[in-house]
Amino acid sequence: MTVPDRTQVGIIGGGPAGLLLSHLLARDGIDSVVLESRDRAYVEARQRAGVIEVGTAELLRDVGLGTRMDRDGLVHGGIYVQFAGERHHLDFVDLTDGGTVTVWAQTEIVKDLVAARLADGGGLKFEAEAVAVEDLTTDRPVVRYRDAAGTEHELRCDVIAGCDGFHGVCRPAIPSLAVVDHAYPYAWLGILADVAPSTDELIYAHHTRGFALHSLRSPEVSRLYLQVAPDENLDDWPDDRIWSELATRLGVAGWTLHTGPIRDRGITPMRSFVGAPMRHGRLFLAGDAAHIVPPTGAKGLNLAMADAAVLADALRALLVDRDGRLAESYSDRCLRRVWRATHFSWWMTSMLHRPMQADAFDEALQLSQLRYVTSSRAAATSLAENYVGFTMRTA
Ligand code: APR
Ligand code: PHB
Image (cartoon, rainbow, N blue to C red; front, side):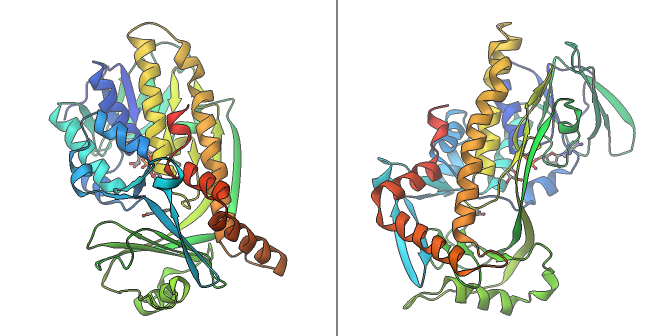
């Protein structure tokens, strides 16, 4: 597409946050242009998260993006939590009065959003890399970007949405940014395999050899993860070693892990990161551009989409009703949800992963905590409420 040199909202980044924001704005008659540095095939194939909260699923449905999710997504009413060779089921439906999650991959959400933007004639430009954002404290901020041929352009906007992920250019443009950054001494080795899942719901396994997770993408495709060291070399993990380690860590008596061809693999570092405020003048951050959570608990995608929904409301008030109050409170309202998810992801991570130098005290505390969440209704309800999406419905 040819990008105009003027739009109401210049959105940097065509991940779930940027694409959903553009879609929501279009429904309110607000014009936007999404600039995405990668090409369409890359963005649609990138393997990322796969579990969405009740509120996120409702949001997709409400904005006309629920058809494929309702047909092909898998609704799960709980998870398994495993430790000391015991597998326990947490029944979210019972614990949270009907709460569920939907296994529906980020890649599928992104495909639907890209198709919707293009079908609407919405402004979406691939291979367009933002290099700078300027004039942020005026009401005509500008994005400078480079196209695939290397030519530089300018996009004048009323507002810029920085949805450009953790390594983008927007967060560093906030002069008063304060950062909280926490590194974890482990990473996840994740695989996508062409084999039917060996479980009906996700299994989160604590094991003396390290954490393992059995997730899934469809009745034919499994997604599995192993805790590894942050500097782990993927070349040291041939298929046989991956499957045998997964079988050991996920194993319980009478259960078999089915194996199959591995289609995709990668190592993801783990960190908690929150940058605040999420706004400077006419620049607003959303999603990974502002915050990162470790994947334990599957909150990253849900947070990114929640930010987009909150931002769309604030921008409608600002640009259509000329009311800046929601824009003023945008950062604080998002950060409340972000910190709840940050705590929950940290807590799940700490309970389930083996510390590098685990001592008997750490291990006994983890096992005590795991026994508590699988035997106390109050403790199980707290986990379940956070997992299915607690702040989504109240923020
Ligand atoms: N110019 C244009 N696009 C950029 C630039 C730039 N300078 N820098 C980054 N991008 C693009 C990236 O290529 C990416 O497609 O911004 C997009 C950001 O998308 P995501 O990283 O998917 O972030 P977000 O939309 O916030 O979604 C968060 O992604 O990382 C997962 O677990 C996370 O599920 C969560 C979700
Ligand atoms: C995934 O399916 O990719 C997934 C599921 C649950 C998590 C993290 C990742 O906690």
